[in-house]
Length: 424
Image (cartoon, rainbow, N blue to C red; front, top):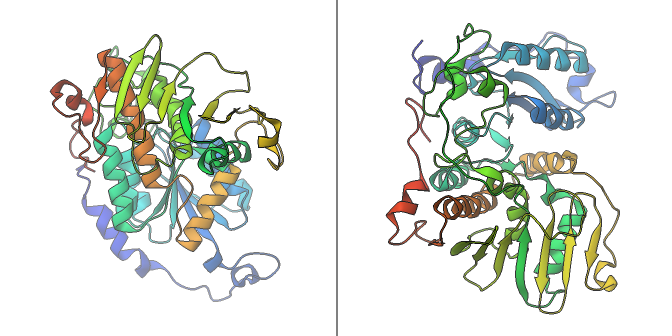
């Protein structure tokens, strides 16, 4: 079958979907909003694309919300399609969840309002942009982009299409992180001097070439669709099983700076009121990466020296005080007075608050906490950090022109070619 992104079925189904719908002769009370059910106009009709371990958890958060109706699953793996359908059918007490192998078929459905995208990172930006062009709002797991150009395209597409986007950086919706960010943004730490992020790891490298193995039938696992926009490589069950752990950034494997950095650097961006920009300098220093914003604030990406407050720790330092927090929900500051009014402690990193923020944005058409512009610039900061780490030297970035001035070696990593026929 022709795999062109504008292939025949995509637009035909999108244009003609409404023609096959008909009202039932007898309208159940639930359709009218009676008996405690929400009327259809108050529901968000949801589809999901690429649902593995993480996606399964987030999908559960969506399905807990009474104003969500989950109707369709798309996955290149037959076993996953069937598993998610069985779960949805059991949840709703029907057989209505539809299965798709190709995301374009799901996106052609006009009854679907929003999609959860939890594929491997190779697909995130391309799938999100394709969904927005098809008129869908998008909740996308992180990392949301593979390089700087994809980050900019993501933000521009959601701005132009007026669709709602939420990056899966759910810590923006957790009270301990939001409280710490407010201390920095509201000046309670004095003039902000430095923000610290945990990367999860500092390694970068080029994509590998797997050992070729016999590919399964396309219906069982569609290797061509699994690769999607990534450069072709021979089938390998290890890559298929591990969720696409390759080419996470401009041909680089990405490392922790893009994995956990998608969370931690994002929070530092927020604390520095930098959701519309990125640091201008990045330099590896003694196992750390030190970046500098145009306003003089330092971003320190480091693996050690934390207070043991759980995974994904961040620290914000001003000239009169500091605060540190992590996934335990605990917070430590330079003065106990800074933590007055912090609210209830929530440990771990649940996504239900973030999912609710997205659904509220879908209904109000307002901006979410992790909107496309914020995600764009947080990811750019991570991509630039990875370039500096890979090149093992300082790089300078222009966040207005979105390039590394007079540095062709670094500029090579701003983008990468997508495998035909996929485009953004």
